[in-house]
Image 1 (cartoon, rainbow, N blue to C red):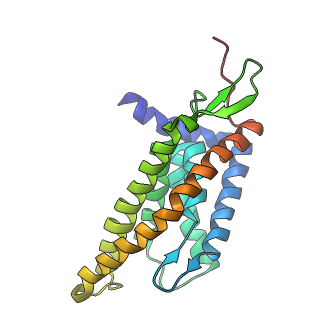
Image 2 (cartoon, helix red, strand yellow; image 1 turned 45 degrees about the vertical axis):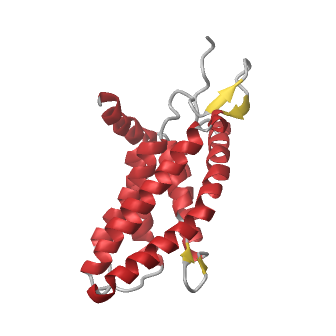
Length: 211
């Protein structure tokens, strides 16, 4: 339990590094771009903005993930305002980043990246399924907790979903998220190891000490 809470302090310290600040800012900007280029299939709108938030959570932890989620929602509303600004949705966006940070932030000891004796990257330990399993868990928690439970309840509360059509809305949202997962999971599998490699090459990951 102590190590769990210490993770938040380690995450906060990530932002004391100016290079990390730049990386987080770039990833937030990428999230905004991905939000603009969502795919609307009439019956379902596929949005890939979560990918940047997942990378932030993995590289910089839950504290930074939470702040980045808040920032993405606020900046997104300023850039593309639609309807009223409702702060509770911003908090939910922060919670999304928090989820990815808690589940994926395990890079302090080089857990995800394997090295040879010279300290050069040869492979990603996530290929032995550890990282991939966490990626699936993180995305499922995001979909179930954020999309299906919290956002559905908020949409009902604020009148975006009518009470008399609540059951139909639940069925539609479940179907929508299942379709999205079919695209989301492979993208996470490809992106997260690549992001770790890029982060390490720019000094973001400590090399493992020799045994």
